Image (cartoon, rainbow, N blue to C red; front, top):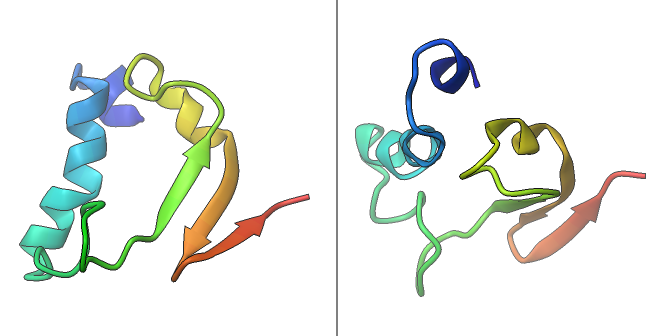
Length: 73
């Protein structure tokens, strides 16, 4: 969020940097970092649109890890 608010980075560029680019930098780009067949798909669902308002990432509705949904009460 600091990169978007203070550094002027576009919201989706920050999301890509934290996901697929981070996976590639760790040598894991073939396993994680994208939603595609054969990939490990851990994801979060948020209230709002982080491409327009990066702070929407603070409002996580659920986490899916290994195909299982976890909700916070």
